[in-house]
Image (cartoon, rainbow, N blue to C red; front, top):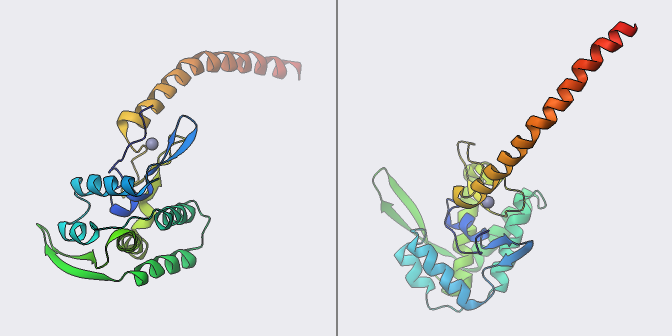
Length: 211
Ligand SMILES: [Zn+2]
């Protein structure tokens, strides 16, 4: 299995953020364990195109305490796993935004003009606010229903799957693992099915004959 590393496979900033908690060799790994790690994640996510330059410039000066970010990540995961009621989740998100209010910019792209949230406060509080806004948007728009968890059992990754057809966070890692597992299972099942089917076929007539 690949070593834990930052990913941008979630589909939104908020989903990529909760994927900073990963499974590796039976352990849960927190990729945002230090302020430096948060700075590295931000640089990564900015490079991946999830963070606008204006947001980056506001956030960049820091500081980057990790506690609030990790609590936020835990709460989002709790909500997605069904362990936090929707109202409580929305209240938590609203609180995070209220603690570090956002500014908005209208940004033209190829298809339409989009309203984009920009933090006004640097460091972790500003980032939390931006993340909370992303999750508010996911919940209010209903897109949260399309947030799926990777079907490779131990994998902790979530991603946006609007068409309901994506099974794995990544074909390179979890997809291949599942394919290999299924290949071996299939190879075994051919024998197992053959035996079971043979047994039933042989037994059914005998039972009938006895009646
Ligand atoms: Zn996965």
